[in-house]
Length: 307
Image 1 (tube, rainbow, N blue to C red):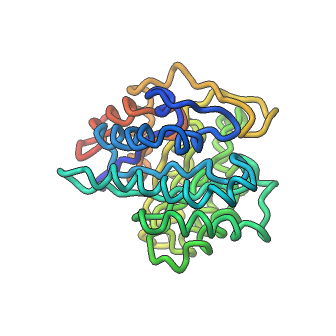
Image 2 (image 1 turned 30 degrees about the vertical axis):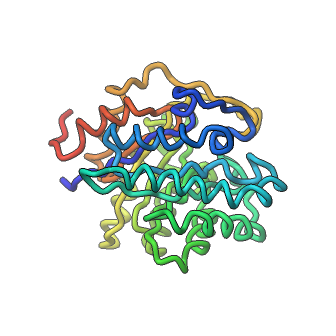
Image 3 (image 1 turned 45 degrees about the vertical axis):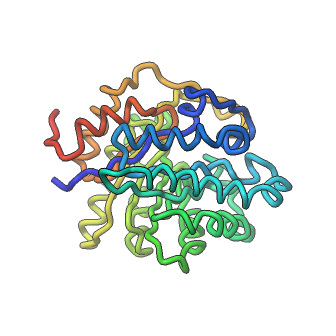
């Protein structure tokens, strides 16, 4: 069994727990303006809980959340700040190395594959890459709904010589859970996404911001593709705790409620199955907090997996 690396959890609800004001459409970007010390504290608490990797709070620093004008005028400084805060928290660790992952979000909106614009995406990604590059160790293109979004991220970071991690969000509708179809939110097959990741030289292929119930099948599919190609691709998971939501309202207009049943122990039970299926990078997404990460790290890291 390979060693497990622990990724951090969701940023936004930890910001709220520690007293930061969040509102839509800016969401977690607002904390960089009003409460940067709390952003740093969230990173620090995730590391203290056992996270080996912290992710920059740059997910909402796109026009979809902060608007086009603000992205152009304030975006570069806020992106730079998000990288600095994560780097400061990681560098303060004295007993081990903490890795900083630079979050490169879906530019045109979470769960919105139909809005992807290949003619405009590099214009926005280039601003994020320039601001984050001095501070990060790896790139994390996350919550991507279609393979073309991942290819755009690969293109954007190709000259930086830093490892590329790509994380896709999965179809976690009731039908997807029941049939274990292992598809991205775009409808593309996980198998095709894994084949792309192998060809593209991705270092870690992850699945995130979907319900825990769909993750094991996706990891098993990706592991099969990886092993057939004799690739060194690593696999990872960080699920969310969202309740089932309607399709009404864009991701920057509504607030998702979270599940009461996904306690730290329940989430870690899922994580143990992901590890047995082949995941070696495991953390949490929206609604998964420091308490979840602490329980997960204590059970999975450098310890035998139990049922």
